[in-house]
Length: 355
Ligand code: ATP
Ligand code: MG
Ligand code: FE
Image (tube, rainbow, N blue to C red; front, top):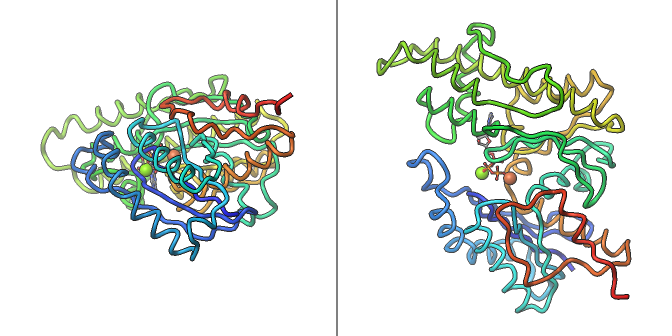
């Protein structure tokens, strides 16, 4: 039967129902409000919001799919990495549903779910066969991952300070654009010139594919310092936004080139995470991939940002992989959510069949 999946690792409360072959039967996402006034996600507020939103959301999603709970075959949830309060709420809810329905519970790694989204049937033209390079760029993540198979992931590089989305949000805040500021910054940048203001390109041409954004942030703060509390001229703010975005795109393109060097078998570059919505960055990624003889794919925005479809799909893929290996699926109801859960640990889910 279909899988019902819950996502609650950050500030999106989401539920989705997928048919066994991956068709999306229903999906809902609530992006929590109540964080903007604090300029970032407040873990306690997020956990409480998940708790109050989930029952109605799950009911509504079942309704959308026109499915009675007893029609479900599996129940899945993100169990990490992420904010522990939300993870406990979402996975606890899903486990309760699984127990009540006497169906297996599948624990899903949130980053693995982002990584496998591109494999949803019909999403990427020509499909997304292994191996491929994943660039995950969101508010909380910034990493290059070699996706070599289900449960077979290698982190090639990651950020040594801020995540890309975090950098966008912090710079947007400095420009007075509110939170989360990524989309507003992109909008403002359209009015500016990307070459107007000289900014550093942290780590560019260094070996490997790690990222660093804090130097860029500091450079912007220095450009803003002379203005003190006087309002920024709009054209200056726009030039800063455009120059910042250009610097990020340059850095990411350079890092992706290095990541592709580290993964010569990759013929496909996949971008995921909210920052992958940025059109300037997308264009650069596409160009970089093409120059290396690779295809480029980015899931549509609602599947790039946090959602439950990806959780359901990852559950289905891992379920099948376990079956292919003749192994007991990794469905331990006692499994605890993990705020940190490295992708490198994922292979250990596949435990040998009883023998
Ligand atoms: P997690 O990191 O746990 O996946 P998240 O909520 O931080 O969760 P997403 O929801 O995937 O991540 O993405 C949100 C981030 O994407 C924010 O930092 C936001 O500013 C950024 N973002 C969204 N649209 C754009 C854009 N057009 N340009 C730049 N950044 C953007
Ligand atoms: Mg989010
Ligand atoms: Fe995410």
